[in-house]
Length: 239
Image (cartoon, rainbow, N blue to C red; front, side, top):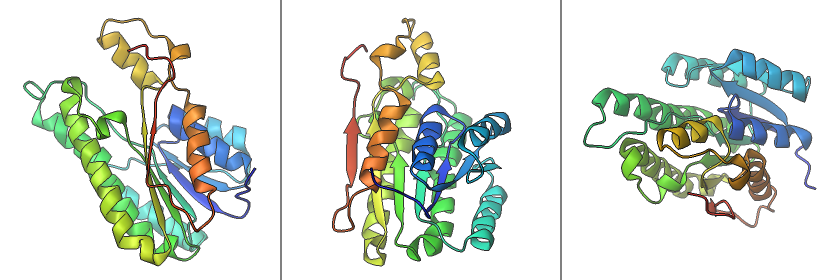
């Protein structure tokens, strides 16, 4: 088991299932983890579970001022960052023919603009230890979904961000990995399944911990190797 003792990690969307699982796995291996999300109650509960090395930071990452504040705190408190995990975002399950422009604006702010601003601001801190960035994308980042066209658009752009960034900053010693999970047993997928009129069967889906193990595996590779793209699907295809 590779240790992350002494490393600083920031996980957005840590109040959600996948983000929380990734933060928990990193913490269990010794990292000090910034838990970033909008739900203060869930963040506090996770911090209580992880202990003193975890730092809960409630922020809406569609707010540029909140992003600037988070960057300034990391700069002032640590002056460096080893691991950045993008796991926050918004989704709307609507067809492009009927979805509103306002819904697209919300998803753009959460899925593209926020991660872009945060990443750009943290690159100087990631250069210092030779950092790593993980983009938790979606299967729709590779194949567009007719039922969630706007979300698919943002996830394709999210992949493009990671790909272009990799070419920009590999020379600075920073790795960039995109992860494309299939359906995972989270409240978001439970809601989607209900909207589809089907039974939610979480035992047949990926578990948040499955994705956390994959992410930590990629982060554990020696510096001679970089995983660029990872696709992970439920073993039993129930949808």
